[in-house]
Length: 384
Image (cartoon, rainbow, N blue to C red; front, side):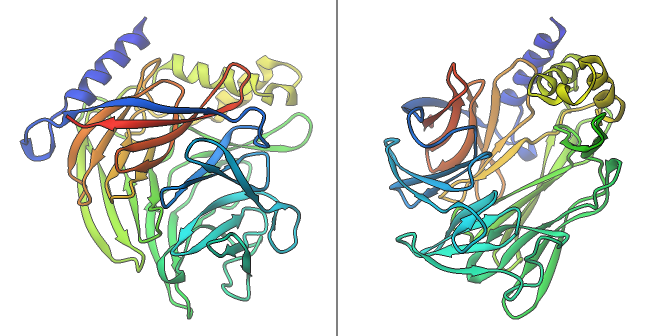
């Protein structure tokens, strides 16, 4: 009962909060579903992990289990697939991201950390590895995340794996053709990953859903990226998170902050997350489910408040779409900001929707059907 009250209060706060600087409260907009396409019967199996929109005629998607990229029409019809399992040219072990840069389509292999580049017809052109950039390699402490305009590579820093809780400074690295390097602080030292000893003798890495203190997003054209940062403080204080926008050269194009009232992280929400983790198979690594619960609970980072942001999407028109706190048993609240980071409106997405792509007034995402298969969903944002 208390979690429902918390969700109701938080939802009222998010939807009714004033705009920055005491301006008129932001508009409250609505979503209208305009398309739903089941992926059952296609080659796609498992949950969608990455999705990207190409111009206005194709959607690209990959799963967490299949090392290839699938292309669909805007009506959900399969068109083609890119790559296959392997370590040769145009083959992947694990998809770590993809996107468009001009007429070139790039795909990151999360295992080898190489980048495959395809032409507009999806024919392989070349594979970038260590010979192009020394940070592209399986032993590098930098993980490639995107290809920006002009061939600039964007990396995030990896903390060294060790028993207990990973922590350390986290940066974005911009690597320019010709050898120049620029780094941008993504987050201050924050524990976010649990490395748990399993009774089988192995170590499991588990990402805490609440301990992160920053997030970022890259535009579909690779011409800009946005970084958001915040600090965890007492629930009684009204605090703020910071937004910074950069172009593909690393030049800051805007910077501002958004105030917010922290939303409590309830014990019930923590319990639900642990139970979902165990039900997903983690409990089988222990002699009992109770042993698994104790192992997770011992090191799980549970701040007093939920992170203010869960996700950032950069729309094709340059707007920022921010998914706010993951409310207990509540809907997902999104805010729409203009290119300078100022609030324009808010809307709510259905429970269970994972949003991937914002395109002016269209929102693409996935939900799961009754059999756990992904369903591609398209919504239209109705602006008052």
